[in-house]
Length: 317
Image 1 (cartoon, rainbow, N blue to C red):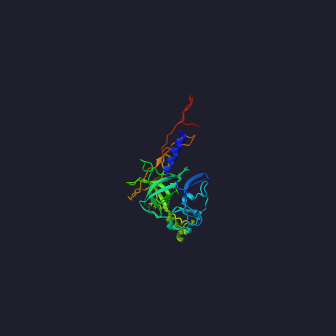
Image 2 (image 1 turned 120 degrees about the horizontal axis):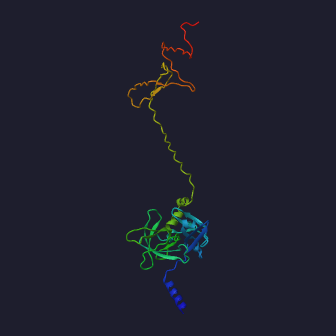
Image 3 (image 1 turned 60 degrees about the vertical axis):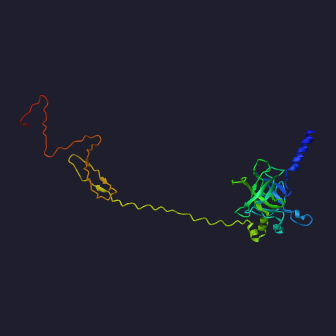
């Protein structure tokens, strides 16, 4: 009995809560070490015998991941990476922009989508705030259905979600979710792409050309700036002054000559020669004793000394 009662309560709560629109379909991508979540919105194009069920609109950065593992496999028809819109399974030239209401500031809307890993979907209430300085984007102030919570916001996977007005008409798809403090608001936002503007842009020939990504030639690299360093010219240096003392001699022996070199100072004062006296040095070769010669005419007579027992004669023959 308790199980039955709990099931009845859950069914009642489910009936009270708003369910995700069937026009919002979950997409999941995986490959090359990456995973991505998002939402695509069914256009419900007018046609004959249900042919109007074909075609989706979403954000370009969602559908650029290729064919999803989960979600519709319709081929990408055309996309614009700058305005971030994309159409799948239908040529937007067949669409009528008037079928999709224009954005109006202050109008209540709901966002239906599938955040990351969410398989049941989520409905987020909000109010259209203002257009962005960069067209075609608009801003929606997010709110929360729980009492006492201003807005939690959504991180990851909300891109491409469907924005419906009070009459259930598709007016935009989500480009990004963000948080920014503005006085008197919930500070929680969704940046959206109006479907009407996306159709008009896709139908303009100029925009159709711009949607084709063309790899333009890179601009020429600026010429390198060559900085040449010019060394300052050296100041003139006067040749050194030499004093040759090699011709100086001495009676007491050879004289070692020592030239004196004088480098002039940097100042412009006149240079004065300086003379250094020669340095005397006696040269004594190895194994010899130096004998100093006596001055001329200076003699010392040394008489032989007679051996013991010898006699000295005045006149010897």
